[in-house]
Length: 145
Image (cartoon, rainbow, N blue to C red; front, top):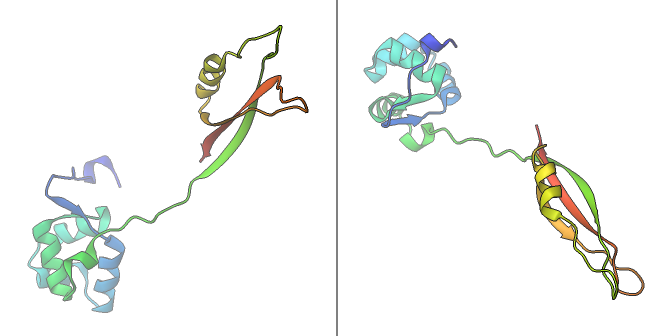
């Protein structure tokens, strides 16, 4: 579809299941022109609805009436997709004890990773046999496209 054939979606437009409109038209053995006549619409309007999946409320009602289906049946319902993530860990060393105290620069480490698309998920503080730890582990995630 070229930019020239795109129609700007207007405030009153609704998303239509264009695939369903095409399937219903096929079940009735109607051409786009025959659907346009049955619905009282312009042929170009039917072509646009099937191509772009948007229609004015009036056009959607007309098509629903022509097919004798409920208007809600024609509404487009996007499929829910599950995002895939990848994970990585960043070890942040530090010393904690009687003589040495200090926390790692968590903000700088996370900012650096954030520039590469990673986001903070969880911070883990592993412990040793004596209840002391010498590092923190940041768990990071990002969406895999």
